[in-house]
Length: 459
Ligand SMILES: [Cu+2]
Image (cartoon, rainbow, N blue to C red; front, top):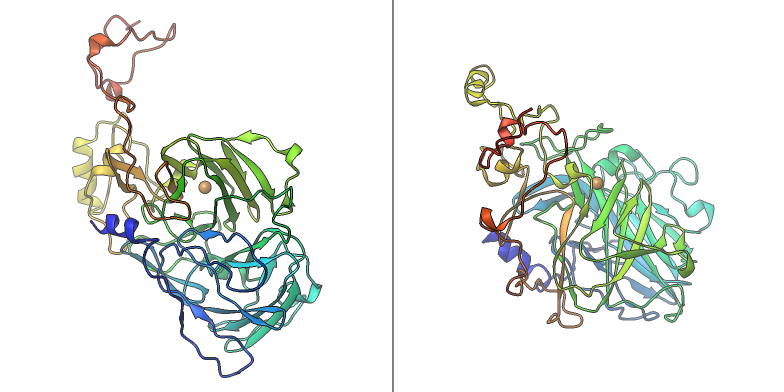
């Protein structure tokens, strides 16, 4: 019930950005903050040059103030509590009330001034990843600028020279600050809306890939982790807490993904082929594009993919590393497929009371099982679909394509209603053709032999 309400209320709900700080210095614009993890509707530009705004998955766009011809933004680096999924709250560092920070949207050629206030317990900087700018605005602490001490406000100013997909993040105590969630998205829209390299699209989604090491039962990421991350996120949310991308059938859809984790993520779409139309270096020239259904987003990269959403349905959209679509789990769990463990478990639990076993028929059991979990931890595989448990977590969401979705409507349309006869279904044994086996194949292991014994295949 909670999840349903969360999904359906995510986009339609009020996401008014409240001004939480009246900065003493009159020349510094207010710093809006956002406390809801719902996907905010696109921020239609109230002034400045026109553009087609993006939608940040479980995030929002930072409002600005025009000062003469300069767009002024105010970021506040600060500790935040991010609800990574309903009931799972994590202490992070972020910007303006959230991790990741708000998306910054500007237009090619805009003069941009960004005030950055540091409310962290240690110094920080902001690096504008991918931008052409004066060297002293590049945000590398100690190299191109002094660090921003706690309590101080610095200002960055440059012209957004080229259109494309960018990110921002600290270049100060980087491993800790990024492990704590400090990152944000930046989109520079083309000045010329008829730019032949950049199609106009009906839906333009963006999010950052994130990895955290949150010990089950705790609420603060470990910051010295280098490889053993256990919580894989789109915009610091994990499935089933990630909103679906809801589009109208026939829409041209753009999805922009940035990777600030420490490993690569093959991002995969079901039911459609996409083209990479832009990278961290800018638009890909149209003759250099090719269709595919997965694109690897390496560390520090951004990729933007586009396709026409012409197949109605609820299509999975996820990282294809299968352990990145799972919630936290122990790293030392042995494979138990095929192992009879009835008696073993009781014996081990006498020695190790918390001992949990991986299922002897795979791990699908665990999606349905109510296991005792520490407080503030996600089930390892969660999410309920219309046909049962989804056995997914982490970097997973849905692309929902509907003929009836209105232009500009981002609300969740609910589960897809499959036309009669179009869902995989059970058939009686005698309706199935014979199942040939590879010549010389051995007998199936006992644990897999759930069906009637095949017979005649023992050599
Ligand atoms: Cu991944």
